[in-house]
Image 1: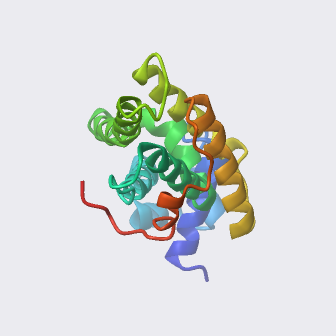
Image 2: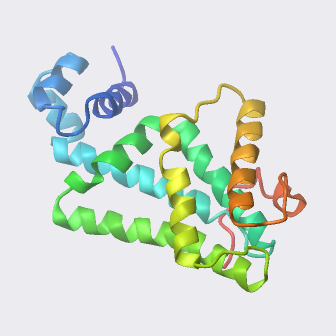
Image 3: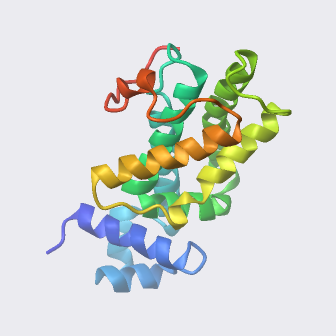
Length: 207
């Protein structure tokens, strides 16, 4: 007999594989080998399930971003933001896929909540890039365009970023961060000494 957590992971995988619009309640019930009424009693409606998945992914990204301190250089902050983003992608790939692809299918109220969370998350990157330009760490003609570039570079990593061990993850994350920093004309290479101390700290940092 599967426990609720195991059943929930099956629901997330189904949404990830088939998409929200391609997953009917009968599909979920069949996959879990339960009646539709039992599925509803456990997880709510299909819309409730989508909200749970999307809000969890949005929360994971924000929680990670909040661990990046402002006491280190903008380049080091950006390195950590990239690293933290890739951690979520690596550890919660199916949640991330549903979040990025299907959040627009939420009802108006929930969609606006997620949009606000997305904007809050994006603001972490924008603030760091603006600070980097002011300190002449980054050299870009348009800070907003640079921010959109970085976010776009991260958005589709769930399609290919896959690691099986910590060493491989660290090497790939460092290389990807180095590419992004290079695109911003940063003279920094990774790993960055100031960021190293915070790589394994998960506490939220004061602003």
